[in-house]
Amino acid sequence: MPRASVLTRAVLVTSLVLAALTTALLALLGGPATGVGFLTGYAAAWGLFAVAVLALRRAPVRAVVPLVLAGAVAVAATGLVAPPRTSTDSYRYAWDGRVQSAGISPYDHSPADDALTGLRDPWLFPGRAVCARGGDLSELADGRCTRINRPTVHTIYPPVAEGWFLLVHAASPSDVRHKALQTGGAALSLAVTGLLLLALRRRGDPRRAAWWAWCPAVSVEGVNNAHVDVLAVFLSVAALVVVVRRRAAGGALLGLAIAAKLLPVLLVPGALSGVRRPRTASTILGATAATVAAVYLPYVLLSHGSVLGYLGGYAEEEGYDDAGAGGRYSLLRLVLPDAWALPAALLGLAAVSALVIVRGDAERPWKGALVTTGTAFLLLTPGYSWYALLLVALVALDGRWEWSGVALAGAVAYLAGPVAGPGAVTAAYGTAALAVCVGGWWRRRPGACGTGRKPGTEAGPAPRRRAPTRPAAEPIEEGPSRTGPA
Image (cartoon, rainbow, N blue to C red; front, side, top):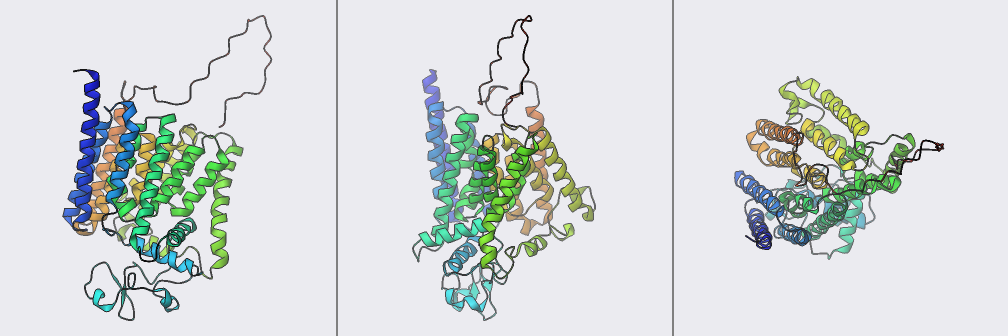
């Protein structure tokens, strides 16, 4: 068969699988939001996603970017077809934006506080008739209810996230409700796709951008549930790409990412990968710390209470301080007493971080960032699926697809954990850990090919040519070594 026909068929097959993926996501988000049925549909969407990515490998180079972008738009659009299905976090986002627009610090009052009664509306605080129907509603002391979860505690979100909530509120019509945040999530997810394509066209394979652009987690968590994690992902990817050449700017972007979600603090060892000079490390860390302090300062000055909000209570509620209280540290608890789980997790993460800093690739900091972030997920075994959006983007940037199983494990923990118990969390993360080990072993085989390229052919900076050797009779004047930035 002529090569042109084979390439045309590859484009057609990829398009058909993308259409099937889009249809599956529409059915998933249009159906019941809980139960085994949703998890089954979500798993099927992940299966179609994997097939689509594999089909893209055979598509001609000129068709890759159009296919990735078209699929990104289609996948993101599916998240807009229904209200948030599996999370109520976006209602808190909308409330925090409204509170800030009234000139009030979101850290000073809980949604249930009577001081904010004048800001309540029937959407976020429905009447008793709606409350009687039940569902994902939280009761208030006066017999009414609210769509906001944990209405009696202060907000937990950092200042960059709060700035995003205020921006979306200010830019949206008054009656748009959840659509504003969902549209913002879709715009951010597409921005991440564009950023990945730009980065990978210079330093990798643009096909890898599909691992983010077409991932069902982007549709469900990034757009439909409108989690602010997408903002943190965009800033994180930008930080890792920029820090290779511009240390201070990359550190500042990393500070913004941390001040959007806190989770990107796991990227710090990756940003320091291969850094040998203390001055270079201090530039990155100083810019990161200064940026975090700068964005927190206005809220510190405007708030009467702590700007950390419910952070400490959240960690306790989720069982991070007491391993025996829930599904956290589930893999460590298979071999260690519960009391040892937290120290072991901290020690393991510190060891991996040190290894990444010492032996990491300064030209590709996302490689170390993927290892530290993925290891943290396997050690902590979080129960919320949207946390893994950061991991999905790192997989797309780096290309080690086996880490994607950790993201899927988070979805199993969130959707099946409450029904099946901690055993489901352990099984999901255990399977993901096995996949990471098998994938790592496979890549180390002689002649292994992990990204569709032969070893050593990944796009990157062209190697410098050595200067011609001078004749032995000529004295060579030694000078300072120039090997590029650390």
